[in-house]
Image 1 (cartoon, helix red, strand yellow):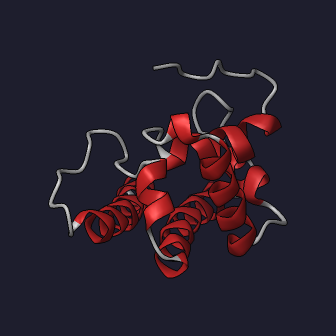
Image 2 (image 1 turned 180 degrees about the vertical axis):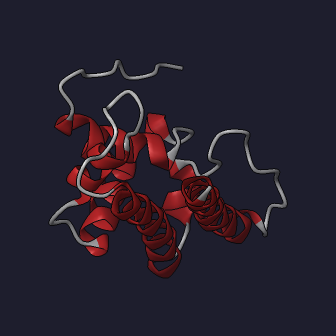
Amino acid sequence: MAKKCLTVLFTLCLAVACLGFAANTRAASESPVPESLGISLKDWKDDSKETKGAFLAGFIYAIELERHWQGSSPPPFKQSLVPVWSKGFADTSIPEIIARLDKYAADNPGDKDRSVVEVLWFLYAQPHIKEHLPRRTK
């Protein structure tokens, strides 16, 4: 029961972080949030460093909360990506992640509709897994 409650809390934390960021970046245009996680590189590029930092802090905090709940013996890769995310973000600061995402967005204008979370996956998490998942193409 406690684990289900924490999983729900984890999901809610992530959703609140994503929706708060999306609401802030989309308020001026009043466009709906896409069905994905909703934060595209275009949204990312147009927002302030403070909002970017808040989004990343919420995202990383939710991952770390789940990692601590899993304890010293996390589930295998096919059951949880949390250890992979944690390893990817280890020894990296939020300002460093912001700078790397800003550079990626500037260097890849054709990816403006790509989800920030997807880009984070390929920049930070995927390099730490043995089974490299194919990059999604549009």
